[in-house]
Length: 542
Image (tube, rainbow, N blue to C red; front, side, top):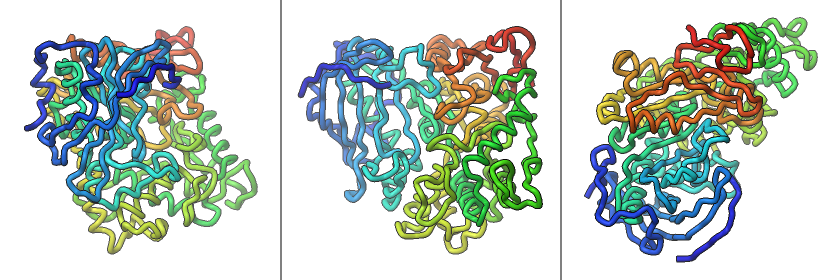
């Protein structure tokens, strides 16, 4: 075992934790780091098929986490696939000295391919509250079963999709349970005790993964935080493919100046529908901006102060539901479109819709979603890295329909029956920004409604809260109208440990020193009277 002390700057079957929390004899809160060096993880420690795993590195570290120095044992792990041609699942664990006897798994993002920073906070976690590792959680995460190319755009390398086991590890979430089981096995070896509770937190792809673990393995996690989840992944991909077609048409792509025009016009029209003009649209359902009001004379492109007819068609398509005229095995029929006519900003760096139109080859300056579609076509759908993604029309996929239908059973297998999770005592906090430019909040609202309709409102409320955050975008990226911060981890702990559900939570804007009530969907915060920067000046209504 090597030892490193320094300061780093930067944010059988395995037992289920819900049913097995008894401590092992001689438990400790100090990790037995040296004992883990080279340790083999038997395949029997994981409930899904693997060829076992092993510890590939151990190092004692001291890092600056949430403003304090935390000492921990960092463990690197390789979980071996059944298919020798598939990649390992690479995993890391940070095992703190002074362990609080709890563990937390982080989800990934995009196509994954890297191990998340285990010192980070949970999604939308406020900067003035400690990250899980600073709270002395044992934290862990994996790369979901593949390693992205160093030359690839971060989180946009889909080349692993040519291998079925790697595809299932990522798209169906198999790597999540394998990583969880191997990590809990090592936590037990390190501390000679089972964690008293295990949580999962993730956003975007990680938010989808959070819902996958709650549904597929209802006893594996005591509580889950799912933020801006791309839960119906294939459905969104089909919409992104359709929009790639639309935006690639001649003169159809609205460049940065016109994206600014659109955003400013929407804000000017809808900012005060919630009772106060503050740069935040708190009631997006009441915002009905008509892009035709920005039409250039005779519909021709006459400059940055207006939209041409092709650009209006593009903006309308982006903001409208996309429905495909065929059946797929998952049963999904549509994706609800993005809120660009009610407050989302196309210009968000990296995660927005880019500065150039989609093309072949796909420019790295095109939108994140366009590049995601391009990788999906090349490696998931056709498994031909030279295939032109713009040759596939999601409305008329032709010979690719059967493959799309098959992929839907893998990518969109996340059904909404959370009754086993609720019966096991699990709690779920679901959050989404109303101005998300990459994953539509409308899709998450649909997920919530499906859960509520299946279980009934009263039963759903016993274990689930869904909060739509006004003005928040995807992962607080760039300069959102409202940079959301809420201590969801403390709220989840109180709910799991003490049975105290969140009551009148408040979300802060970490960029502008203001706050809003965090209203349980479908409520939204309406301004009443007083200081517009104070949460007490708003009331949740519907």
